[in-house]
Image (cartoon, rainbow, N blue to C red; front, side, top):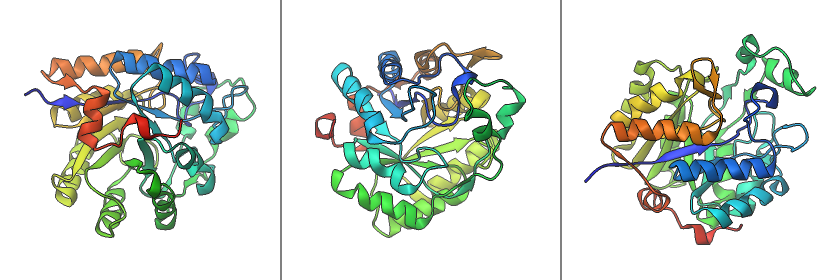
Amino acid sequence: MTRKVIITCAVTGAIHTPSMSPHLPITAEQIADAAIGAAEAGAAIVHLHARNPQDGRPDQSPEAFAPFLRVIKQRSDCVVNITTGGAPTMTIEQRVKPAASFAPEVASLNMGSMNFGLFGMLNRFKTFQHDWEKPYLENKDILFRNTFGDIEYILRTCSENNTRFEFECYDTSHLYNLKYFLDAGLVKAPLFIQTVFGLQGGIGAHPEDVMHMKRTADRLFGDSYKWSVLGAGRNQLPIAAMAAAMGGNIRVGLEDSLWGGPGRLAASNAEQVRSARQIIEGLGLSVATPDEAREILSLKGGDRVNF
């Protein structure tokens, strides 16, 4: 039987700013259309952040999520993954509110504190539409706080909702942090581990980095986890191809990369999903449907969410 590969699409995020691409979804309507387009292209899971519709600033209020969550639910059967990462400048209480309110099938969970550097983007982008963008990007003092207490707070806050987590691991220590929570009984298999490559402050994007994270996860978790990868920027598709060939799943989307090719902005999230699909099918593998992803990850089902 052909192996099924889950494609996740992260449609907007909190890293890129509106001036970087006219294709970055900002409004609730744009985010909903981007998510539905990605699902139609083959994404089983859509990973969602919200933004202020006037200036594109990250917005983690449940009120910002509600309009597009309802539309996506009405128009698609895709699995919805709501961020608890929000933006590095937000408090843990702010970050968990949407997942706690809407009880999605999946929520992302960052597995360790880290330096978080966006300032490298200023080498390419020089002019900005909104006053908040340049100070946000040039800040070299961002500490993305995810302490053991923060992580436990999110796990316990969402525990009664039967929401499962996509564990985002930006470095080796984050895998060991996850092992602690597994041994403590606060998380359960199958773990959905997203290893993140190429963000300033985390592990690099060299093939050896990918192999190191995979070897470490294999040693710590054995057959108790499902592996997925995301590569930042130009690393997106090379790392996707490597991981798919190694038995992994793939995340793409304009949250992680604005690009559709060298020097060319992607016109949509769906374009990146189609590229990922070409890689998967070119390897003789198949793209998982939303229901297949639900079975692989032991999810509760789209009828048990609060939106």
